[in-house]
Image 1 (spheres, protein in one colour):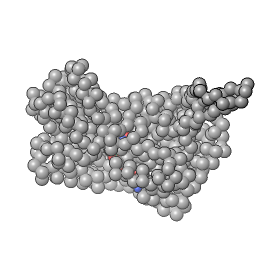
Image 2 (cartoon, rainbow, N blue to C red):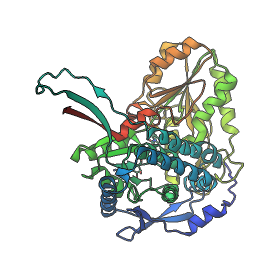
Image 3 (cartoon, protein in one colour):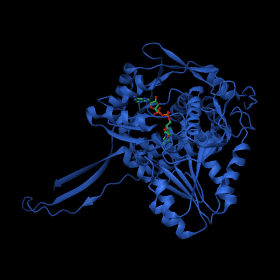
Image 4 (tube, helix red, strand yellow):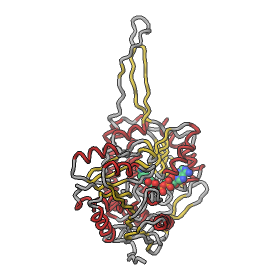
Length: 504
Ligand code: NAD
């Protein structure tokens, strides 16, 4: 049994003051309110299992109230009449306020989600802030076009003048997962506000705290009431009524492929628009000419960052036969060097998984692999006072039909397979229901560009993994979803195209 030294978490004064205010409330029409039923639920520190705060347990009645507030703000509030420049300035101000509170936000994210502090403080929350800055610029660049037509039946002396407008899609419901709450939420709020939409947010029941705090900060920035509304609670009680709601124009969802299917089904009543960012089982390919000093730590980081709870995690590693032994040995050494601990402990490289239940699910996949004949080279244990840690795991001797190779495990578990040529590795990499991302490690330009073209994935990284930028579109092919976030492409999620054709 792996021993983990869990030091009692130390919080800064701001994060402690936020927690002391609990139970946290819902935000509806600019007011912080309790759920209509009065019910609350506990949110836990995943490392220890202890209660850190209480959240409102909303239901369909609260969803109705939040959608009504968002509708009112969209149709009649000050929001529709604000100029693009005013929206742009507001988004920039939100980024400034987040930046000023980044330490508090990072501590809360770690306490609630479990991630090692550096993950939030130096990667995800700066990434969230960058979303607001990038889409601040987009607010002033939403442009239609004029269209010359061949219409020739206009009245004598008149002309046809035709043009398009890009208009906000309306009230947007956003349903979020627990792995990287703030940055994934920012990836939806920032383009939606730039477009002029209003929103109802439903964070994961596991990790709602930083969304509550973010909305407090956004209120400080001066967002008109009702533009952003927050309903906390469970998937079936809040997410489902939001996805079904007849007055919601669009649902944007990030989460598992299984729930994504339910969202698509639930949205059909009013044929609302849907965008779904779903799971992955991303291949990482190490070619025979790769720089192994970069590729091995790169491949280790691709799977072990945030405990493997990353949609684009490089969970299937393919190593060319000529480098296979070195890669396997290197991956095991990297895994063993990872320091597990409470996310708020500065020495921690990897925190717990989100919950005891999730750790046990991950352990179940590892056990299934073992039963099917795979070799666990290192790791494979659950640990910690709440049994929520999984030791970084490297698995070899796998075959393509095993569940460890096919399913998204969403934990620190990588399977390593050898290959001999490019055709073989392309076929293996594409033999998946998912198509979210891929990584290729090679010093050869033609290897890199040809493989990048042949791999079925929404993003391909070359000699890197998980290089995110607010300007780079990200999203899935196949059952990893549809739609793209970040970059100009993200604006398509929140805009409708209107054609105007006039006789003038
Ligand atoms: P999940 O699908 O279990 O839950 C996501 C959200 O959906 C939660 O807020 C949950 O309450 C809600 N929900 C659950 N049932 C619902 C229902 N019937 N109707 C409406 N809402 C419902 O996902 P998770 O376990 O929170 O997150 C992990 C998953 O998210 C992984 O599969 C991961 O790959 C995926 N993910 C994808 C991306 C991406 O960009 N593609 C990014 C991050 C995470």
